[in-house]
Length: 290
Length: 322
Image (cartoon, rainbow over all chains, first blue to last red):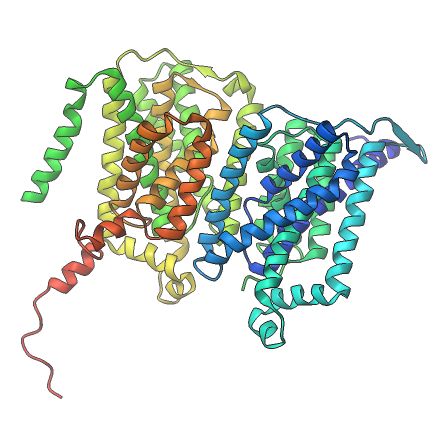
């Protein structure tokens, strides 16, 4: 492989920009896992719903994706809340596989409904075009915008978890639900909000992905594997870990696509996922399973 | 030997179907037996051993491609090619199982899903052998009878193996691993070996079925050979019938095929959603599957066969003195 500083720097920039999106993509999934020890297999489909709500806002109402983003996040918050209330509460605390299977069934239903409502066409929102030159490197505006928004949302979420009372309640529930109850945390409500928040973060990620990549109703299954890869590389339940995981995946994908083959850029997520699972089954910065 | 007689009659009955059935009925029955067989194979690693796999289709695809390549390039007879597909799948499952079975719970499930996606990508990229996305074309099959017999034979073999497994120490080891792997390890069970054996069984048969499938539909491409839908159907059949039981996959497979023919053929656009709804309803309301519901109604004998035999043993002559 050739050492060309400009080329490598350019690839690195692309990788980091992708990583910002992947970090947000994985954040909601990781949050739900941290609090409920449930892998939400339908997370990719919630991302897809968010993306298509934004697309609908753009085509039907002429809303800019960044304007539509809060609305689709709010709608998905409600969807997440309702799913937790109607479905997940019934399987939490039972067989660990029951929850995984329920979300698996849910993802199938959402994909099918998505195909019926939105059709199977591949959609994109090409509102932001052109690129900037920053210090000799090319930065496409759409990717830059998506990256900055994703980072801002991630930082806001981490700050929310860290410095607000409700954020503390979420972290307490994640660490030890029984003790959280004795400390006066309404664990049930915390879980409802967490699932809603996870879905809302997914929707935001979906809206941003729509800016830079075309999507169809079946794209969710590809995205969830990327989100899995991110949080498994970083460690399930660890926010810092998932940021590291996102960086690793984003950069590996860009370099893999460039130096090996585009096909292997796509596979890179799974290869990384398997490699890390082998060496460190709990992820690079993971917490042990309870 | 009424039991042997019953088995013989069932096999003879199933074997005689092509003599009276037309091609439509045969193709319905082929897909029924195919998915029942896949359900039985999945049941060994996921139902008995508790390692939920979302990627056994990897071995189905490997079998399909192996058989297709052998038939096209080396003109191997198709039953032998399908068998070779199973053998290669089993061979491949040794290192893969050794690696993947170190993962537990959701990690294993997702790891296997990732594996099947990698396999699909490799099939796309390895053009000299697989012809990439164009796929491989095989000579068309005009007589479905041989295909039917082959699939039914494999499915029957799987019923037999599962029945033996359910009554064996090996089966007990797998169940022990499912219930408490650490505990099983402490009891001196070589859990790594037992899991690997179960995994290889759960890879060999999908490989053979994949090979037969390739011959049956005369075409293999990456998307259909490694379709998540194939795993899905097997998983739903096992869950619906009852995971970790001898008759569950058969009950589930038959129920699913009947549903598919009667109901879903009329609503093709919500086929996937109905599948998803079935998974959720089963997990919520029938967590032990139809086999358990049948047992409670007395249609199936309760408990496991070896437990029934233990219970039926004559009591010791005298109670031990105090």
